Image 1 (tube, one colour):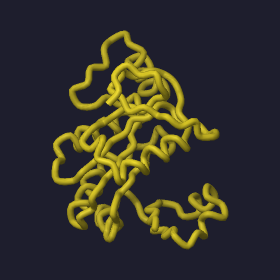
Image 2 (cartoon, one colour):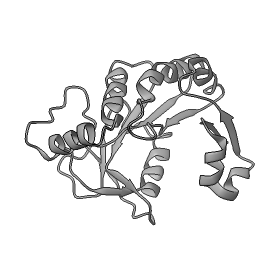
Image 3 (cartoon, rainbow, N blue to C red):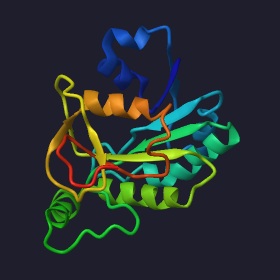
Image 4 (cartoon, rainbow, N blue to C red):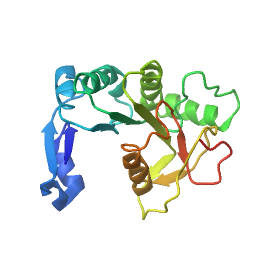
Length: 200
């Protein structure tokens, strides 16, 4: 059974079409700014998967303020796995971006020219998770997400940022696999299609 904690059930219905009436789907309206609702949404869950982000990207990032409540809900309700999706541009704590790298240049455009809050929001989430050791978490950082048929074979790695895309379907499959896998617990891998230089 899947419980979807969403700000707008109407938007979810448009995205899912007929699947919104699936008997295994429970829709819980709520806002990430409501910490009590966020914690309560984890009750009875085996795993919590967060793919939330700012929309539009110029809006204040919602995840950094919400991550303490998400982790708190996992603790309170003894959720065995938390999977959080960030973006490949986000640097993990202690990770060097460099000055004239592909990552630094793209980050500059995204942050200052496009006014996006996503990178900063994601990095604050990763910084918070770094010190959490009583909840088993995984934080993925996939490349740019695009529609299309699954290609399979995503590689979790410690490579530097590079431009590129991955399919939503492949990231969804990888994410769901983390619910029952301990392979990447307490790590923040980037997700690319092979080849990669530093596989995890």
